[in-house]
Picture 1 (cartoon, helix red, strand yellow):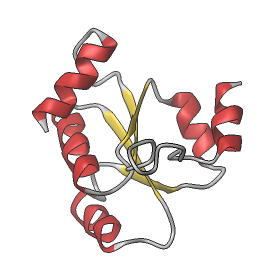
Picture 2 (tube, helix red, strand yellow):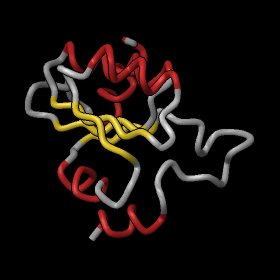
Picture 3 (tube, one colour):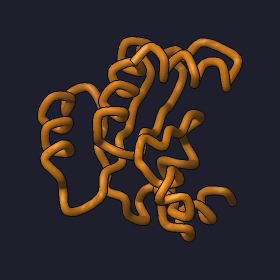
Picture 4 (cartoon, one colour):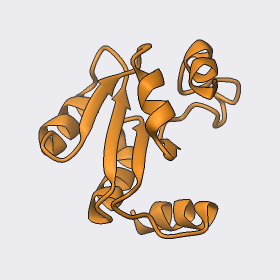
Length: 114
């Protein structure tokens, strides 16, 4: 957890705090660690998951439903991306062998960038 949070803080060149609005894409072990670190730093956290919900997604939702907001990876995510000042990809998208995959649909990313 601390390694991931430290890497984010190094990238943004400051400490994560309660003013941050964070979007975490994914619900596996890496996402869980990142979310826990963001919660400890009192930031606002939204977790994006895909359908159908996996066992990991259901577990994370059960454990953290009172601490974070959960949204499906649909066009609704555009609103959350545009509000977030920190976006974390905690999926395997972009990593070998999925190097050409994106964690979100291209049209959602394009809309959020406008």
